[in-house]
Image (cartoon, rainbow, N blue to C red; front, side, top):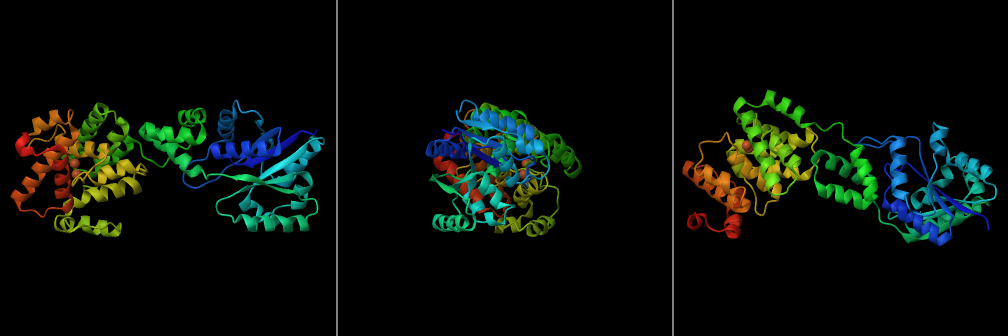
Length: 409
Ligand code: FE
Ligand code: FE
């Protein structure tokens, strides 16, 4: 019996488990001897950097290692320039006249295959195996296949029975970068589950998809040194150090906490109504308390600048910046860390009970949030300031979950 070989082309930037599962299903259903992954020479996409051909190939090799009936070909890459499927398949056909050649194709591509370069050549060289895609109606797709078979007598179009989950390469590249920039394990775990642990290790250790736009800590600090007052800058460093120490204490990603600390007051360099004006320019919704006391706005504005100016994509960091002044009920660990670090960092000296909180922060973080929220609220009442609803809600939630500071103290 002739060997059955299926070509699977794509940019594979990077290859992921949906690709592997498609290959497995095709091997099973059509008794294929080999699925050949054939990565393109160049890869273009928006947002994150693309990986070089060498790196994409290395990830493919890791992902298919130990899987029988799968291999890689660099034919398209070695030919250079723009390559047409029709030419690629004709070359393979000519080299392997005794093999049955198949070509794996997404249903969305099949729908406009008649506009490809030389579909007649493609059909003459290979049978097509179509993979169902979530966005393509299967009936329309089969009807279109019938038409192509009518138009091109050599066409043989087969369908994979299984339907595959959509894995987003964009999400993979994002995860790779977020892990490299924060060290947060859950990002690596999610990445490993999408591309195999071996491929994930390669991707992060080689810093593939690193976002060259995102600022490093040193760059952010240089920038803030220009913008913030000397006092505010010293406070920023104090919060970063304290947040890092708290993160280590609670087993949270220290680098992530540090960056959140560095950036938590990055929006605090304006005066009076300038906060309101900038917030309106950025389409940020403001509460009544924020309109009455515009300095409060620096938290939301800071999250905005962290994203837009410093290119921080990690939503955990952004939300910790956003909520550091008012807090909110049931905060995440990182949010609690920044909320507490902001209050207890070593440059602070006027608030009451600081020494108590500097100790309790490492023993019971939630309770420390509750005690700080209590002090903040009392302080605001004494001053007669407008109190943000969230400030009160934070206090209520933490008091309910961590006890009453009056009886506990
Ligand atoms: Fe602040
Ligand atoms: Fe602060």
